[in-house]
Image 1 (cartoon, rainbow over the protein chains, first blue to last red):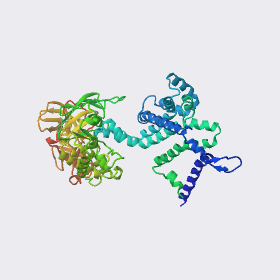
Image 2: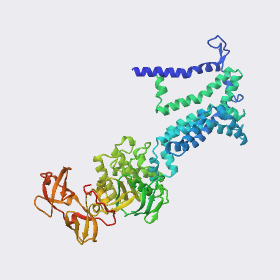
Image 3: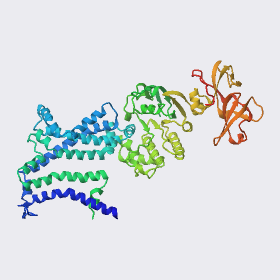
Image 4: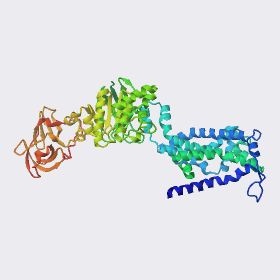
Length: 268
Length: 355
């Protein structure tokens, strides 16, 4: 079967391209002395992992904090993005183009251009250096993704289904829960996964608004990398990409409706 | 058993020049099946959505058994609507769809299942409850949608063109099913349609909407025998309109005097003649005409007649007029019961009697 072999090849290339860059990190995280021009380290050790996973390193705490911030940002973004996407996807109104542009702006503008003005505003609100401030700042790059995904979802949604539910005795809340939500759920999950990842990988906004007091994983990772601790950096980096890998697999299943993109390609 | 009273119901969509519905007054007696008939864009779906509560009216009132439902949320009206498309929720099974409204009311799972099963049997979908909507044929989907509304035993059932998405054979089947279910349950039902044949075959009463206004509300046969206006007569296939004068029980028309069934108000009037009631004979009769055209329509043939300059159309059994050819002279008899003098408050414009 030509198609199957081609698919296996493409799958392997993709998997290789995705996995290869992380191989050195994985090796570093368990290496004990690894100098040029050795192909492999002289010795192996679990010291970096023991340290990275210990309480004193603060990596686990940072992992939890980053997860919380990404989760909170995603939930907030969904609460705003679902109704906003509905308005953009379903209704025609004056200034729709401008609203779309403004929503897209954070995705187009460089973060650095936004961060100073944002800092000034959050400083006045007393939110700099707080987790709340960081979450609010993360909403800026996250909202465009979820809103545009939801706008696309609602553009294909027939609101007659909601009218039908109402006339069968469903309250507005029941209509959302039992009719609208199931219809938009695949899109909402995809949008939420991307929202989570965008928040998870924020460095600049977290640094500027958190002022070093909100130590998310990218900041911790950068700290270790800057101090030359390759072994610990490798371990943290692997922890850091964990949600990305999980989300990639989950979203591939969501988008294709099965695991074919990954599992099918890797099957021998 | 519920009586629906609609009073002065008006709706204008934002930006629209003319109101979609203009001061509609309509009373639907309890337990009847009434067709809301009209050409597309006449405001009939708007009326249905206003009654269902899916739109809010600019003016007017809607009452069920003398209690106003005008300001009630749609789910509190006891009114169930079936849309033109079946709109079965794709993430639920057929049984899940039919049981949807019962579940929203908070009924127990056992009772929902029992009532859904009974309802599925009534619409001939027994045993298909576990299927997904996409696994049903178009006719089955429409029956499931009907079952989903009927299972709620609503005070008022609204059907928006439920047959228009079906092809001819299924349409008759579905029409008979709606008719028999309505008789069985006695639920007051309002069905929107643009097809006058469908309305006639299906309903006890017809409310004809033209341009957002109620043109006539009567029993189906009255639309043929006693149309309220020329527009109504035209909508029901009326083609023969004559301008003239009424004097007592006589109509002085363009080709002579026609006796009426009973005396009407004297003065200028417009008369309509039902084409199927015009009788033709080879010999001399009250009027004589020249055959202009004969057109075979299947169960009937349409004969176009020229009565000294006035064009009339007659419908006759094809075998009775088989030998007629254009140019033939025929005798024409127009019985008084085939004539109907249109009520005088209409704009008279019998401009094109050939229509």
